Image (cartoon, rainbow, N blue to C red):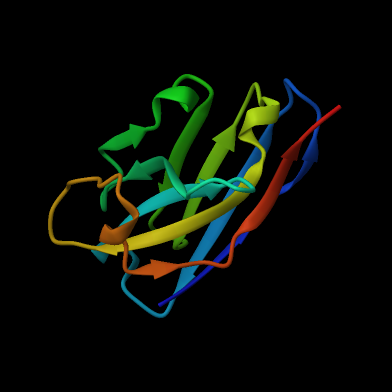
Length: 125
């Protein structure tokens, strides 16, 4: 299974970005999907996750109300819409896939089986 994240870039505080992750090489609906991020000098952290069918989502508290995760199971894509961006959102963002038979969304990175390379998001004026 291969994951390719895209959509990162430089944005001013208060701006928006939409990240995409294309998944290939597996059955997309076998996987819950997650977005994680890692800022310089910090550990990787969970940002958002979505269940296999897309009915269940979960978010880190700091992004609730600003970020939205979604998936298009027909196109093998997962998205992270990021609004009202803050400098503290600056990080490399990774998409990840969790092979699962349940509708659970996990927030810990060790649950995820496959990872993309990441895309840089920089929020700065």
